[in-house]
Image 1 (tube, rainbow, N blue to C red):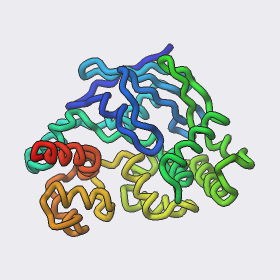
Image 2 (cartoon, helix red, strand yellow; image 1 turned 90 degrees about the vertical axis):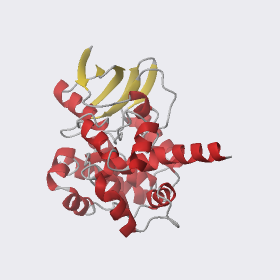
Image 3 (cartoon, rainbow, N blue to C red; image 1 turned 135 degrees about the vertical axis):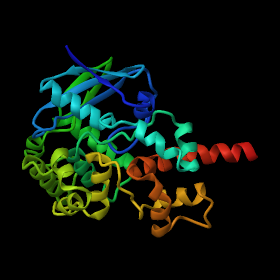
Image 4 (cartoon, rainbow, N blue to C red; image 1 turned 60 degrees about the vertical axis):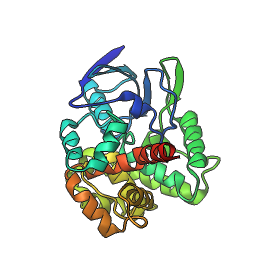
Length: 297
């Protein structure tokens, strides 16, 4: 059994990450361990399982499966946003009292990311014109059928299939032929290196958005999802995202949802952490707003 340690710079809460439900994972009760199973950066040809635990500012990873330990450690750090010093993000709250309230309501939250841009792109194809629950069931079934299964801290978890396995797929329940063709396109892009986080990060947000939209089935909305929630850019503001616009309107006392211009104005003091701040608005804003309603009732 191999292991690694990541020392968190600034506040970090593994509980917040483990209970943060989105896309590839359901929100779950936290038992002290976060279980991850994923395709490994560098071609996505290897699958690995990792059990993550926290002891103060030390984040401990227990590795199941093959692959270079440094690559596994770096990918887990990116997925948990531990590749950044959060002390600088804490300073942003001192410039914006609303954001400071959100930070205090969820101490140690960092944006959990998709395991990779490859898996985020595959999720985009599987979830198009479906509910999140429907897409999650298909993804889980596909992973169980042709992905590698791991026993992680007493639970079974299957990794999403490698690009090679996806390309061999001729048919699958819940994936109609047109969707399967788009999923094959994602797998080919991954095999060609176009969905590596390092590659997309090197392009910058705007060029990464443009490149992702050359993959069939990935339009502007899903390209933005991949850039913001899989690559790891800290300073992208999704000013046209309806949920964030609505919550900003409520949190900042606007007459309605924030317009794109109002969003840009509010987010200006958040630089260079506009991505993280927006995640706080989306994830923690409802907690703060519900608490205020309860106190005033």
